[in-house]
Image 1 (cartoon, helix red, strand yellow):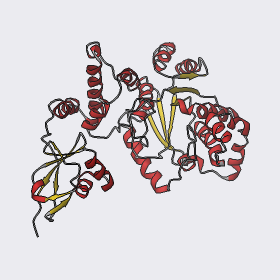
Image 2 (tube, helix red, strand yellow):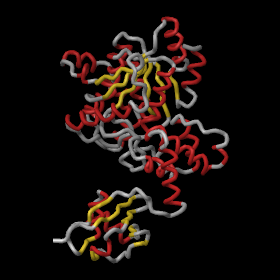
Image 3 (tube, one colour):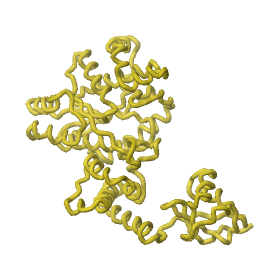
Image 4 (cartoon, helix red, strand yellow):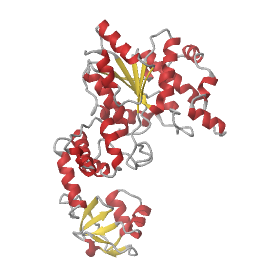
Length: 398
């Protein structure tokens, strides 16, 4: 382990805050003097499937701790997901079934390992159902720690309370349970986004009440989504999933506003060289290539860039277009065909047609034509939007 001051400066270089002041360096110094790695905690509630780049910001910071020799404790919140984190919420989260939570948890863990080092000395994966499925006596002892006035001070609760919006008792319990996670895994440091600040600091209160050393808290900025306005979120549709095809990763990255290139590269750990930084478009392309290489595989960055150029520079149709069978009817209802070929609803397909978002063999489809002869579409390439294609193969006639 290197000098604690040097390590602390490296770990906090792109962080939003390290609290309390000096605590991270103290923890690093103590770990060095004791000859042991720090236990660095991150809790993720599997309330939705798939990891996107917004999650990668904190996972990347965990990876940096691993690279310095420290042990990451990744907590999959299978129990806290039943409660629902109120952070940044204007309403109570919907309740998920146990099956949904388990399915999402498996996805989160598998995808998180695309960023983290899966080595026994550097990674410990736990589910907080191991310790939160406690008896009533233990829970009542824990419930004495927080004060209602303290919980109402947090911004999201205060706004909802002032606006007369409901706050469930379970939501009051959430920060208490998250704090107890820190006790259970003996966390030295806890990471999270800035929207988690209250929960992370409250974990120190729980540790102190339980007679344990208090963790240092490191918060990371929230990654702004592809719209350049709001934080990345799957529900807002401004996200990029790390298991999406390289073409999608590249294309969506190219949509971000120029002013987001530097924050994205810094938070996602992409080092842009001086040559790549010469112009915004070149920097954005370099960022997009790097993300493709990292999450889709070696060589995928150049391949995705070539596909992007064919689409948006040369306006050519890709060569590797998936096939879709037209079926047996002589007349084709185009909204139904589009829905089947691309997995969208018929109303979305109809809207795309009427708004000029459908092409056949590169030519815009008439906006008022919803039905056509199958022979007109046989062996043609159907295009929905800018990047979705299907080659239509004639099926046997009956």
